[in-house]
Length: 330
Figure 1: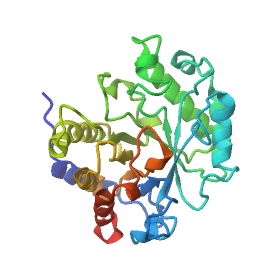
Figure 2: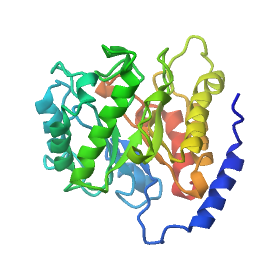
Figure 3: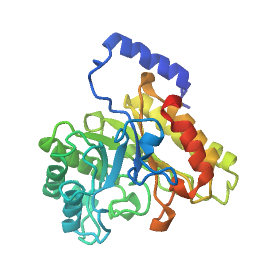
Figure 4: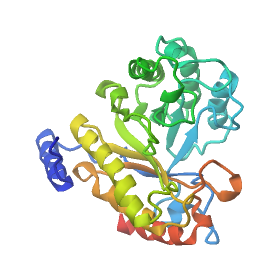
């Protein structure tokens, strides 16, 4: 059994290493920041923007977007590339906010496969997307083929023809995408991003592409209904906390900062306990005292998505989110 250090021990170690290596200059823009999906869909009835309500400057929080999911989910390479145009020159993205962008290896509807992605066959599509984004967000955080250990995306592990070769193919495809993006803008940053809802899939760490291709290591975390753990306190202790601690341990081992690129609650009901515990975990997992990348999934119920966690729809969660993320408390 691996002896996992406490967070305090790890943070003390990181602080010592930081002191030895020196700290970044004060003028260097911070990487780790708060963000939100639909961040410009403001709080109601307060009005304005979420970042201003929480005491931040307007547009200080980053936005979250998806290639091949904007403006629709019809699939195909034309939508894959066109959605990147829509986010950038098409005006869907807020040019005054920084950007966290999820980019799949390939879209639905083209017969594309992870095996072909591993050969570099789709690199020209990655280059097109990178060119649409770079003029507006040259240092965007890119999440290649996120949530691959789930069952809902065409690049998911469970959908691959070559199960035995999936990890090596995923790593090769990830590296191809990173290199295509970096050729357009060396400032792009990349996040390895499985999902905490593993649902019987193998643990994702055999797919890690290496530190040369990753700047962050993250998990998407949602409060999912669970018949075996209906109580929110038990669900956190038995399901959610262990997934986060696994993330923290691998971040420690690999020397890469933590990200929660998507997190939210709502599908299991209005759960302020989850918001409190997730917020406290995020704050307690800061590496060397720096901020980590975290983005709340603020998807409204009326939009009918697979997971809705809009804060305006869940008043108890909203109250705890505001209490946890008001700038003076972070």
